[in-house]
Amino acid sequence: MKKTTSLLITLFFFTSCFAKVAHHPDTVSVGVYINSVHDINFRDKQYTINLWLWLKYKKAEFDFSKYLEVPMAKTVDKSFYNMDTLKDGRIYMLMKLQCLMKDSWQIHNFPFDRQTINFTIENSQYDSNDLLFVEDTLGKHYSQWTTSGWNIIPDSFKISTMVSKYETSFGDPDLQQPHSEFSTYKVQLGLERKSWGLFLKLFLGMYISFLLSFLCFFIHNESAEARFSLSVGSLFAVIGNKYVIDSSLPESSSFTLVDTLHSLTLFFVFTVVACSVYSLKLIKTNKLEQANRFDSMAARTLVSIYIILNVWFIYNAYYPQSI
Image 1 (cartoon, rainbow, N blue to C red):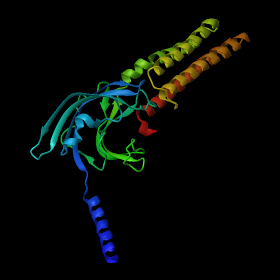
Image 2 (image 1 turned 180 degrees about the horizontal axis):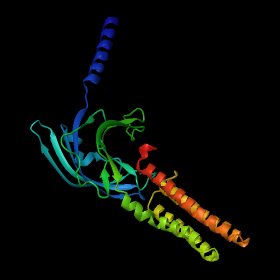
Image 3 (image 1 turned 90 degrees about the vertical axis):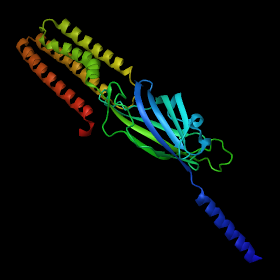
Image 4 (image 1 turned 30 degrees about the vertical axis):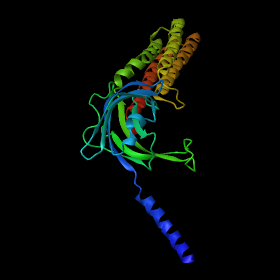
């Protein structure tokens, strides 16, 4: 009796192990071709991607026309899809998607920023025990007209598959622990902005404001009111320029290039005002010649330091790897 019981237990053990080993998840071959990335919105942290997606799989119940999940999408519009059966019996599904995606942007070096766009898909009904994605890497994966106002960073396009882990059972009573795993297909595309035109458009007003305050050094010392009016007006112009740029960017706790250049300009405009006050003090003590020499020296020194610091910060933003 004991031998029979032991034999049954052993048989049950090996049968269970064999059943676990014998179960293999089905593979789904996935390919993608990106037509365009547009409507990049920094303020709302979103962009729109237009692409073709194709999948090849055996089990009809996977039905990606119903169960396709784009985790980071706000909206997914399937404008077209076609399904066919291949010679090897697999299902071939081709669909065209337009997705409004949410993403986080790196604005530290704006407008000389580089961004990485991520697009991922999952099957909302079948986890990694039933389904695993594999990459279809044949051919090109994006159009040469993918973006407008941006350049695609060479060798930045990457396709990968992975298993995403969720610490929840999604309410499934058959799962003993709050843990789920789903196969994920991920596309990454690096973009760099065509930045110099935008930089001049954004910061030209700031630099003109600084130059206006710099002109104070060439106004005769007797016209103190004109000197101070020009400097104070420049201060407000720089502050207004910063608010205009900030209104188009998401809030950031870090000190960005925009903050650095505006703070630098505000400091130098304030320094011009301080120099004018000191020069006026010299005039009040009948030291006109000394005041003129001070204005000349201050003008050359301030503009030289200002230009050098601007070039340094802009260079480090444009070539971040050199920092």
